[in-house]
Image (cartoon, rainbow, N blue to C red):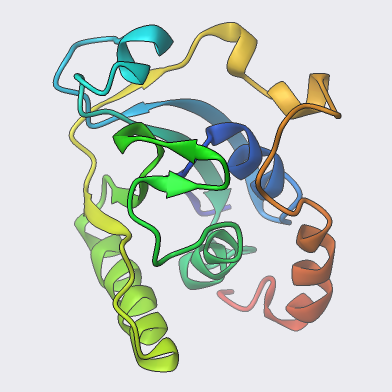
Length: 176
């Protein structure tokens, strides 16, 4: 197993987490706050817009099953990549989109995904791509929120995860 970690901000972290949990090779997720100017911010502090934090998901995955470019392709299906500080009904800097890495080797895959998206769409994505500065886990009630509250608000089409897996079935495990 080739266990790796990446941090993905896709607006409200509930939907991003729920979608990614459905992708083969995702081993673990944890929702929290990325790149905050305040140590261990609370949800209320993040919502104030004064911490600079983004709602994000720490994704631990097996790169032998789920290569990073494939994981990023799944993530990109969950967001409007051209919207700034807004996803669905959620607005504010905490709902910005972002790809944050802890290993500089992952930078190339992140940039490549965004360049490819810009080429195919003819528009520049508004997705932040940067090293992770810090990450604070969100409060317990946010963890696996949609798993515990299946009718909770979500801007992400969770049924699309099954479609994505079917469309890319041959790509899973291709990193071996």
